[in-house]
Length: 350
Length: 260
Image 1 (cartoon, one colour):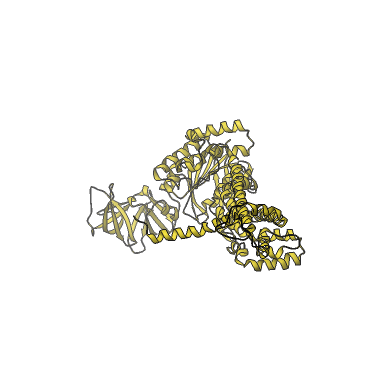
Image 2 (cartoon, each protein chain N blue to C red; image 1 turned 90 degrees about the vertical axis):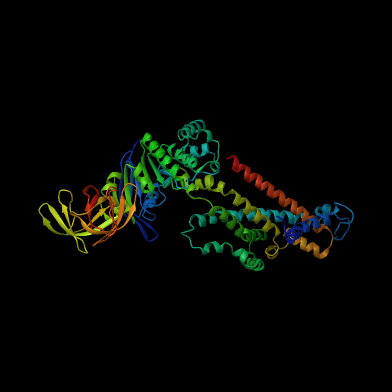
């Protein structure tokens, strides 16, 4: 059974503090959508609303054609995986996994069979009779995963499931999670603050800030085409150069930096969104050249990155970072220009 | 590394003071004399027989155990849900709530006893047994709330949410998931509360009345008239019965929860 999840017009409060503001989110059938953001952005709140541990002030939550908004949490049939694993310490691995089946009134023999099958699938066949205290972090999270999957929920939700694991295990586990999610075709919501984790396994990612979704898109689009300054900054566009369009010159737009300096942007490559706008780019999106049509600069400190040199560049618009080719190192103090590379730069409304 | 002789002396003294009284009381209770003496002169079990010949001891012992069991049970019924609410909603609930539950040990017991006599026994005209039960439940409530609360504060409530997400209603999750995991706290709280109730004099003395008394009060009354080793033999008996009750509590609570 594959269903979609729809949140529409969700507003939520903790006491009098508004934590979610008119949030809309649609997760398609079998899709894995990550909610990504720093702590306090509302991602966990969103998950808890869907799980039924919190009630929204306004708005509705639908899973397929079932309205979840006022349904008690235990009747929602959602598989949850927690940051702390939340295994039942007094039960064995088998009884942990069988817990949800027991609640559904599935009899002893059948319950045991299904639990054991799922325990095998997550690779813990030899550990079924152990207690959680005798398992490693990675094994515990596999039990948690098996426990959530065995009830065959139409929706799986993960709340920072890997943040208590070490780096190597995190990578293995996220692959495992993605593999199991795709094998079952289960719709999934994945909450994390780790950009790499979210981008690596998600069909789409919602970047959240202050109770709102700033942009919801595929990782590829988010990475290369952020829609606003917040998302650009979040995905590592270190340079945010404020510009003002001053004139059109044929098939180019001339833009001025606040401290002086004029830049010509060919219309073929750049669409200026408004009179005041921001040129956002990573250091590799600005090519350091001795001369040409670019931002005039005096090169400052040079650092070696392995694949390129990076320069701290003093420009009329403030200090920015740009990468230059290894074949052509420039000395500190050299006057140069920084040429925006169209495919690696975004023009965003100010 | 050599242990400092002063440290050894200090440790020996501490243990001597902890264990010494127990040895003295056991020795005294076995004495063949009609007065309290240590070391015992002659050996006899007659002071143990004497306990059962004095009906007041039999009666008050039953009363005391009933009160200890009933009062502790009653305070657990109030204390566990209170401790649960305070741990589960620790950020939502005001912090002073926890302190209110400790009041019975902050207020001098004698004041608590007196005010209970004025309000419950006299004011509301409670029967003696009922007043005693209320008094003892109140007396041991802080132990239940605090000790069970300590277990609950260490409990990860995500575990309860996990149970709910798997289809278990919240009230059921409390019994199947929360309680089994704070078992140690409940046992510890029960033992502390039980012993406190059994030992109590200052509250009981205000609430006992004609025909109803507790063992500690009866012991005091007996000692005012007689100075024989019965006091010692009752104490020893009390000690062993208490240890026995604790063992049973550990066993039963422990075992039923483990086999679930």
